[in-house]
Image (cartoon, rainbow, N blue to C red; front, side, top):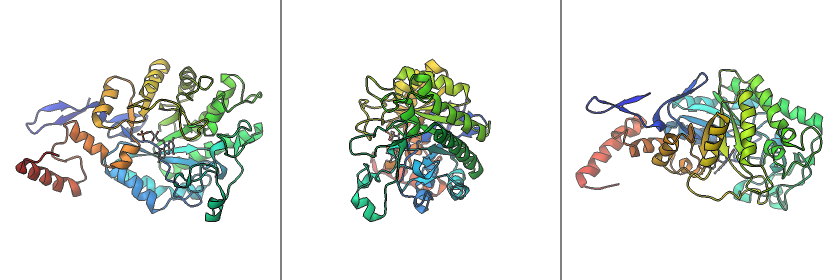
Length: 391
Ligand SMILES: Cc1cc2nc3c(=O)[nH]c(=O)nc-3n(C[C@H](O)[C@H](O)[C@H](O)COP(=O)(O)O)c2cc1C
């Protein structure tokens, strides 16, 4: 149990959110995680100064762990032309500056490795997030062939994927393993397999998109085969003492789709293969491909994290509309999840973590803030107090 020293020298128990957490050999300074957030800003899979500032600012803002965005294990597995890649050693090396800026500012550097499957070759969000069109081609974003479990497009107007042959699936499994090796060589300390949102792995899991009748389809075991083969291959190339996460779409949100019971069954298998934590998202696999049918509300996916944690006996990460420190702390106190991922709120305020510490009353003097800012912000606060001004 970690304690915080108060001004009077008494020890107070830290809120769970700010207690360090150790998974395998890696310790994060708190339980706040930046989930993968695609930036659609890479060139040929290579990051640039945007990524450096983007990831550096979250580390500087005090979060415990950062997963860099969905990073393609092969070129056709990128969502868009702007997605990061890790399909060769040059890409692995190009990610090292991101690793070091996150580490220098105290965060555990993590990476999400991914294959977009039938949702690859899409527009950047600000150009529409649908299939690439003439305007995109004029900008140089030329479509490529997409692949999937069955020849069913993700949505109306999206590319019809080519159904993968069994031997091709084996090649993709190997690509995930090589991506894990490169992630380790680049210095990442945590790795997440993207098994959610209708991308390749989840499109195999879901009966909505997987209509195969060979060994990679049919019943639950057949549909889970790709996810489990990828996990086994990744674990073989990712050091045993480094944490492995797996992101699920806990439910598709359709009556005839993937259900929470399926996620629990999958989580048990993943645990047996050495996955440490299930990151519990939802939706994204069917019309409309970018939306989910799961009703939105504060912490709307927390019940999934809670069910998977309780039923599969594995650590979980809660994500989705978690807005502030009090809400995050309540989720941890209830035992619904072990980690809290904060996406858009942290894009809105990269200092979300240190602000949450203030809101939870553990950092009244800005000591958790970078020294370059904290000293001034403490003075600013005192000025406010003298003025009788309340923030
Ligand atoms: C800009 C943006 C990019 C995202 N990119 C990814 C991604 O690369 N991989 C992924 O699994 N989820 C991705 N997501 C989903 C987030 O990781 C997260 O699950 C979602 O935003 C819900 O959390 P929030 O309500 O805290 O934002 C993205 C979300 C946003 C807003």
